[in-house]
Length: 277
Image (cartoon, rainbow, N blue to C red; front, side, top):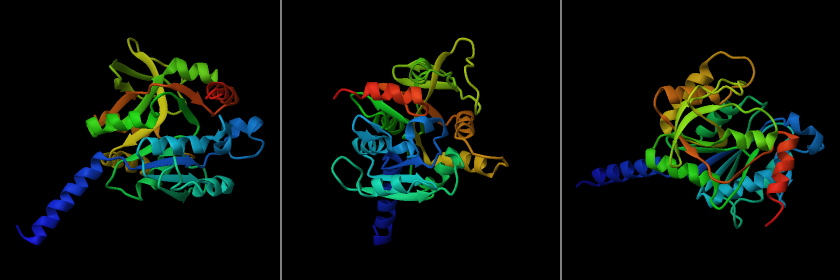
């Protein structure tokens, strides 16, 4: 075989390997945290401490424990303190080897954030881990979702029982309809943005769990959402709905205690969950 042929085989093998391995994760930290102002006292919500670590530190450690080597932290205006903290952690024990900062000039939504993270390596899968959601359990939540991606090579949404969300936040949840088989969920419905509490007859109540893996073929759906005319933020729900219609979305039930830091009640619940050990 010629040297050119060998190089082509190596390149093809490398591309295939990169489709299997999830080595990058996006951590969006550009939101305003308006519902948490009574507890943040003006600091970024990602720096709220839970069990001795800030929320963003917890998620970065979860990424490293899930074998993610490169964390992409998206920050917005007023988040200099987040940027300063995370850059010091790159390559230190328990954290990803590489941490890249991206800027989002204003809170434009998770779909916009995903697009900015995608552009770093558009031919590879990208995990998405929200620092407003933490888990307390024996196995990293993101690792559970990544394992499902490796099996299917489809985009995967981490799913939790809706009652866990309601219990943590004391608020209604956006209901994801689906059927459970082991720890895999066949997703049937993804709610529209802002729709809560609706459950199709015969379905089990689940909710999105703040952990995702997007396969490279998800970018077609993402670009369609980003091109569509809209006012305000671009949410992730329309991307998931498009993937579901294309048969390109799987669900993974996340094992572990769900903690939601988006509202004061959820933050208080997280403090209790991480109070010991």
